[in-house]
Image 1 (cartoon, protein in one colour):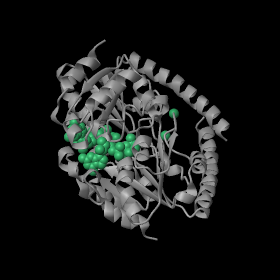
Image 2: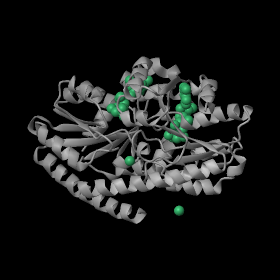
Image 3: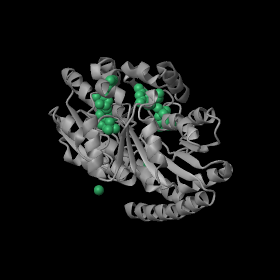
Image 4: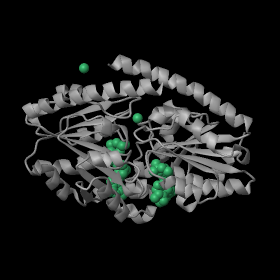
Length: 216
Length: 216
Ligand SMILES: Nc1nc2c(ncn2[C@@H]2O[C@H](COP(=O)(O)OP(=O)(O)OP(=O)(O)O)[C@@H](O)[C@H]2O)c(=O)[nH]1
Ligand SMILES: Nc1nc2c(ncn2[C@@H]2O[C@H](COP(=O)(O)OP(=O)(O)OP(=O)(O)O)[C@@H](O)[C@H]2O)c(=O)[nH]1
Ligand SMILES: [Mg+2]
Ligand SMILES: [Mg+2]
Ligand SMILES: [Zn+2]
Ligand SMILES: [Zn+2]
């Protein structure tokens, strides 16, 4: 049983990797830079897009978004109201986006009117790491309210991402979390990761994040 | 590709269901009542066990625990320090416990010295719903800091559980969450679910939760 599962798993992730490369080529042809936003449920992924969009627009970027959730259009409605091209992806019983779903969404977006694309993954610290979707950068956002052990528990996630955000720092005391421990664990999992502490609700750290995302 | 994945998926979940039934029989033979604690990363699953254990002990229960995480022993250390029999399960790249893993942990626990067993699942709002582990009750805990849309987004989770906890109500204002919306969405997904609002850090709602868990 387990063996069957593992073998099929390998085929599935291999096929996904190929389709992710096709997505990347597709994006490059249209001059679109894509960023995949990963993180636990409720860590602040949608708010990150909400806060970054006007800043990126001020800097001349044409922003679009693909938002993934198991069910419903809560995030879609929030991003759609920013008046940028947006596609909703519902994964149903799947706990992550895959390259095939993103491929379909790309075909529905006006890619020539976009040069910066957010892809918000499903809230999950495990499976999205195994399913690249073709983005140029992967960003992980965790929040202190998840407990300061959240980074330690998910090594693969931090190894996979170039930028690690620690959000809701305004609530660290209320939950009893050490931001220092979270930073230390990130560095231990990935010595190259760029770390940023944010209070997205108040907009703290968003300009710095825009700098990081637009660099090279 | 997708078809292969789905078919194997059905076999895997079917085999898991059979093994979950075996776990249940195993627990029943030893007179152990087991509760599976589900919820997003950092929703308060471990703190729920920490706060409930002394209360259940005062009511004469002999408590034990199995704690699941992808990696590390953060939760194990917290529960172990309560001086109850505890087993740690690391799932690695898997995003949920399964009945087979729990079967192995059951064999390592002194079941005759336990009559109430907590099984803390991996933080994930999706996949654990498809993998029962043999518990008698399933409890889902979400926290307001995940955003008040977290319930709406995960219908299967709330359909699957008998008790739904809304935790960290002390932080609702700080994140701008409506507890009422969360309650409404729970009822909509599952009209039979028993709902409890808690501030586990302060112990608010824990006695009521003990009542619910010990009932029938
Ligand atoms: N206090 C505080 N609240 C925040 C901060 N960032 C986000 N929030 C709140 O946290 C909740 C979740 O934010 P979202 O942006 O919806 O999180 P998400 O990661 O998109 O959630 P899912 O898509 O459901 O996984 C919302 O209630 C936000 O208002 C922050 O820095 N401080
Ligand atoms: N303010 C406040 N903080 C809480 C409450 N409940 C839990 N916390 C904090 O939330 C964080 C996460 O709690 P845990 O019990 O570790 O959550 P968990 O669901 O076991 O987390 P994982 O096992 O990592 O998925 C910790 O920092 C707790 O102190 C609450 O009701 N109010
Ligand atoms: Mg979101
Ligand atoms: Mg825990
Ligand atoms: Zn999964
Ligand atoms: Zn075995």
